[in-house]
Length: 136
Image (cartoon, rainbow, N blue to C red; front, side):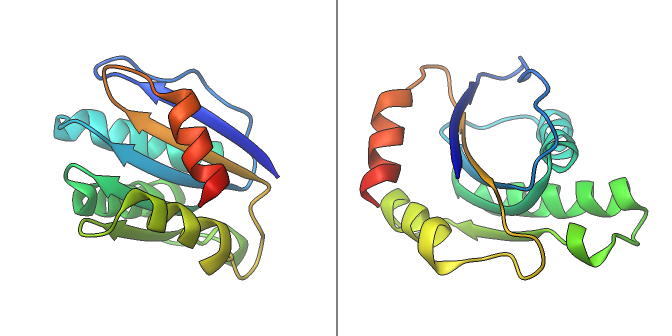
């Protein structure tokens, strides 16, 4: 399983990544505007998102935005193997969310082959978050 850390500071945008069945853990450390959240949610779907766990600032809005991007991308008729499961975790520790992503959830049709820690913040913490994920 490939593990990646991607930091993005709005209004910038991450580079495209190869489409691969992916679990995204969205770690939102800052508030963002609605349009940017939707554009990034569309990027998640286009990158192969099958499972998205949102944690942090306005995490329930991330859950809604990814659901909406998925519906718009597929016109409401996605193939079963492209079903996207989204969750949000506003009252849980990040370590618990990471553990849940690693061991508690598995996509029913196409297992993820990549996990991305998508950190929405001004200051990156790649080493710290990768270590937390490893220990979750």
